[in-house]
Length: 323
Image (cartoon, rainbow, N blue to C red):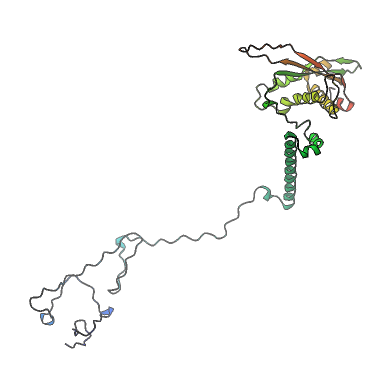
């Protein structure tokens, strides 16, 4: 047979390069073995027989989602059998919408621009007021400094009497006295006669309102006490005003008395709800807190009184009195 024959069974010389057959002429291995002509073999006598067993092919990967690799040594591969249970390729989800729907507006954003400007201005005014109040309170409780020496009157006018601060709760010698504020009034009746009422213990009324109340009001707790402390601090023992705030403390305490008498049912019953308050008088009742039973300290519990002079009620204040 010609050495240059290009057939699949041609023999090549020792110097001829081995060229693979075209893919179309390759034959897939089969399970049978064709007989070989001994005349066409060059196997010398006594040599071992060639291995003619079929080659083992790699098993296909049957894991879900995997595809068998094509065999480049053979011809076109058949379609995968559906009976092998190979999973179908899963379609990828659709990409998210690049423009999600806008969320509904809430809060100030719902308002029109004109109202938004109004709300912003109102918040700015409130913020400025809070900052000024905090600054004034800090200067009031802080030690004496350059600012308080230069603007002490402005700070006092802002703080007194409603926002006065004190540290008696943390003092080394706390208060050991019970002080109650009492008042009586001169009421002019419809016949023109003036009737003097009895003493009304306003501190006791506040105590009864606070007792058992989980959220007592600020006025019930501190109004009378702060008004009386303000008066005592600006008057001497003869009830004469000391300094410029003496008259202010008198009018402040007098107005509280008139308003309290106006709301007192006992005064209305005594005057027949037809009288007008012409004058008021205030006094304090002070008694020492008794020591505990285990203490050997001896303290007098006899109360002492401090009566203030009668104050005539102006007509503008009397209009809000009993009537």
